[in-house]
Image 1 (cartoon, helix red, strand yellow):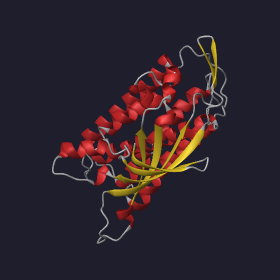
Image 2 (cartoon, rainbow, N blue to C red):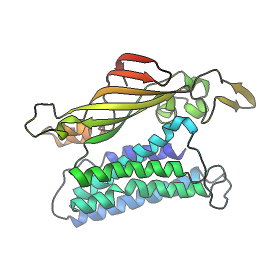
Image 3 (cartoon, helix red, strand yellow):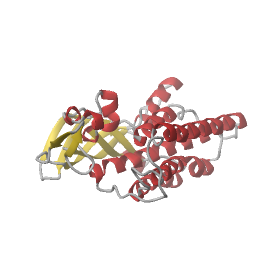
Image 4 (cartoon, rainbow, N blue to C red):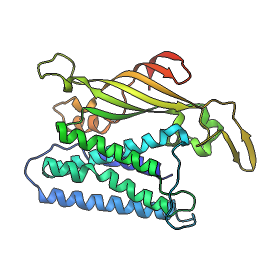
Length: 300
């Protein structure tokens, strides 16, 4: 599915985005960034066209309402994707010496540009369509990055991701993943998305609060074997898992902002930055939409 490819793209881009910023424009670096982004963008669009849309009939441009699917977990995935591709776009432009404001606008909107292109391809596909819900999520992710960068010149509130395996994937592996690498991308039951706020960045410079410690609120869902319901057909066999409850969960936890931990090693700083989108495991309070509350000593 296209969302998986885009999430893989994030992993690639974020690993080249953690270079030291410089104040003067470096034309060679900028040329390399533009060339690399052009190749990645072209490769993504061509790859999707050949591998994802090739065998799907084309139609006239149309919209598609999938706002109720997967209890909106896929929408949050779009938001996170747009945010991090934009953040990576900003970082590589600053590494090239592009001004703060231009890097924010041109780099920070890279995720929105890429995801809009994919939505347009969906709009001409008979199996899908242009999703206004996806577009709203894309705009939200880009907006979260751009607004913070314009207001504070830093990201005080991060979007983060965590994952744990579930039993649901074994029931429908062709949709939710047959192995761990697939499940990380496909099994929404095991994914949790977080808003992680750095408290120290909102306090005075002489405040004693640890600069690396965040407070995070999360959202997840479970009991999902299909987009809209738990009734499906596989290889001609009909399955009805309607008794399985689909439910939302909300979480409250602490977190570590790895991007604020600086070492003397450029390599170590790059590694910390590259994995900064992952929520750090901490004790967590869970609030279930059915009214239940539980404490988890270790949650990821």
